[in-house]
Length: 302
Image (tube, rainbow, N blue to C red; front, side, top):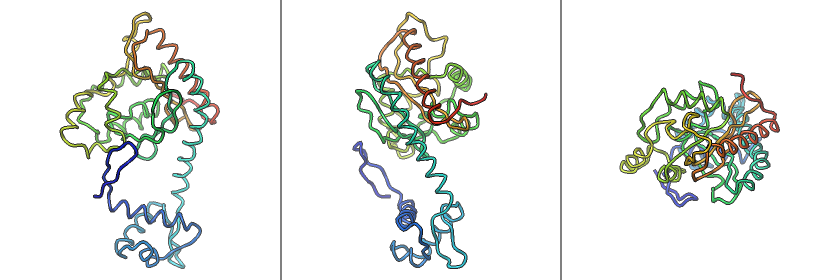
C-alpha cells in the first residue's frame, strides 16, 4: 500500500493492484480507437505479462475491454459506455440544479448543494451560497453515511445499501428506519438534526474508507452515531411554533426511469420553528421537482 495526499490534507492509502488496473484503462483510453496485444501493453506499462494478462482477462470478462479474435488485440469495451453516460448525466444535471439552488441560497442566506453517488462514493457535484463546501469532495457510501441517497429510491436499492459493511460500528432500529423512509417519501424531503460533534462526522469521513480508520477513531465516531434514522425528524417530532435544531434539509431528484438521481441539500445549522422548516423544505422539494422536470425525469410510481 502506498499513500497519497488528497485535497483536504488527509492521507489516503493506494492499492498497487488497483493502480495497475487503472494504468491499463488509462493507456487504452489515451489510445482509443487502436488495439494492443498483451505484449505491447505489458511493455508500455512495465508490467509482468502474467500480471497484465490477469488484468486484461478480468476487464474483458466484465465488458470494460474487448479482445479482437483475429488480431488478439485489446480495446475499450461497451461497459465503459454505460459508465461514461451515467457520469455525464450526473454532471449535466448538476448544472440544472445550480439554477434552482442559487435562488434558495440567496433567499435563505445559506449553502445549498447537489450531490450524488458516483461509483461507490458520494460526490459533491455543485454548491451555492456562502459556505465552504468543497465541490468534488467524496464520502464513503456506507452506513451510517448515505441514507438520503437511497431514501427515495427503490426498496431494493435501500436494502442493498443496508447490506453494505458499515463505515463505523452501528446499531440498527429497524422500526424507526422504516418509519423514516415512509414519512420522508410521503413528505418529499428529509429533516436532519445533528449535534455539533455529529456534523463533524462527515468531515472526519470525507474521502476515507471506514475500514482504514484507526480503531480509536472508529470507536469515537460510533459514539456519535447509534442508529440509522435517529437524526431524522418525524412529523410527530415537530411543532409549528417550537424551535428545533436542524442541521440540513434534503430532497431528491429523479431520472427518466423514476429512480433517485441526485440529492439537493439546504444547510440550516441552527434552531428554527417547525413552520420555518416546512417553508424551507417545501421550497427545496419544489426546486428538486423542477430539476427532475428539466432533466426529463419523473417521480417514481409507488
